Length: 311
Image (cartoon, rainbow, N blue to C red; front, side, top):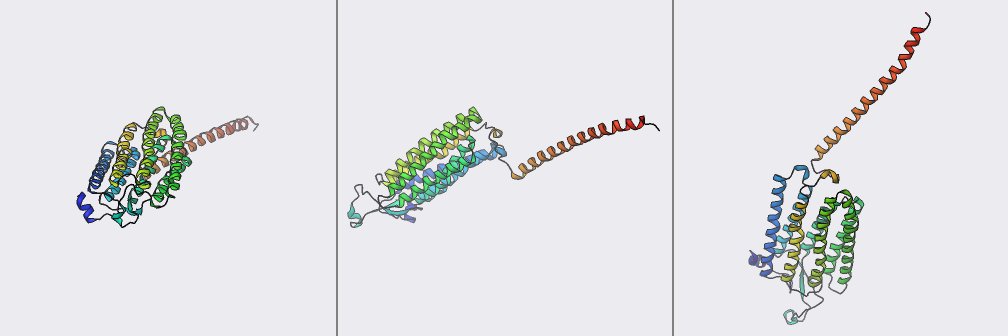
């Protein structure tokens, strides 16, 4: 399958992956796919319907990564971009022209979808204000998109986008550690521990992605096969491995602490409607008691006075 993918979909750049790279990509695809299936089986057979929010988030993350790695293993989802640094490339191979390197936009599409979902897995545990959640996800998207734009730029200006992306990444880290952790600890001590473990693991792995970018997309210092191995290991740790560890930490999560409702909307509305109706009925009953008491207190003395009046 690995050899036929390159023969069916020829490489697009002078510096590109080989069959060794596609072999690795097929392996990562398989892990992502089977993890997705395993998570869905776990959700449907072992997790109550109204407690599946985090499980489905994990399945969405690994499922999206499965599609991205299928695309890359099939040698699809890349575009050629002229490199800034030759790194020992023999220009005779390209007739003296600056060589091109494959830039895998399929990977950035994957990250644009999955990194906000990964953040939601943490932020929903933190109880962070919704405004901060929006801000963190905004910085995350800026981080990914500046990485994509920078990888497509042929000149040294790509490093400007690289700096923008790194700044956005550290802004994400700031909110995760200083706002999110403080909020999670106030909610529940065990939630705080689960949150900080997940945050520490994810931020450590994310810190390595700019290094991979500098060596591959930006600096052309490692081969495309090496790039695939570097990014692949990071993605495996940041997605399926992180998902399993995080879900295990949340297995006894009390959804009421977070104020989350992970169930059918109709069931939630019915439950809410019943609460409202009960509250209204209770108030009406209470009002009736008050009115009755007021009426008795009024008519009682009046009747007594009438009986006492001279005929």
